[in-house]
Image (cartoon, rainbow, N blue to C red; front, side, top):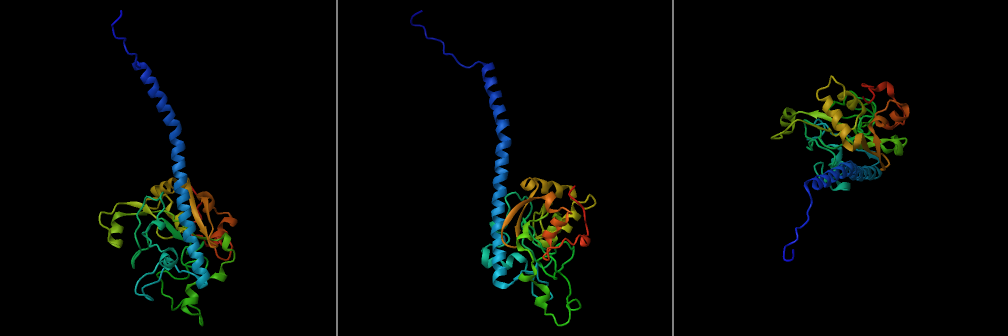
Length: 286
């Protein structure tokens, strides 16, 4: 009939449900790819941080002809001075600044003091494959120990403490620093050692990148080992960003980084030898 309004045609309920279902399927297909892309972007950002810190370390060594010690003991200095502080004139960044924060890191970032090492994203290859301070890594023979009885006759404190540039046999093949291995950081210890209010239990690095410490804290008998393993697997899809002594950076999967194979162990030591017999916790990745 003329004059009557035509009925507007719209979507039926079934059609709307079909469209919604199609959109949901598309989102489910796209979401993993987007998540992987975001994860990759965070990994690249972190690797750029690692490269900058590695280049700063290489520049320090070029100027000074030795590597920074991990820290200075209060017996010989009024306060601990940790390795990132030696690099400040090259990075213009403190430990709590953005350069030292990996975007995939979810733990605490706290500067070190006389009672505790820095907590945060990155770590220094201080000890090589030996659990205690040694001449194999880059951190020197010095961390909370008395040296008078340990220094050979005729050798100065400085020469004994520091690793000279010439001691690193293969700079392009030696780990200098990178993503720190995780350890459980309890709220109680953070309040006691770092005077942090409203602290919460989490998993953080301790300024170290150390094969013995890492293999120790992932054992089931260690408090918080399950959380440390989970945090490690989640960061960069189980990979570590590593800067080598010549300044270049790479991403290395944890299985390879902490492998017991001799050619992998060589990367930890400045003499480019495996020294597997010195490992305290020769435990492969679980």
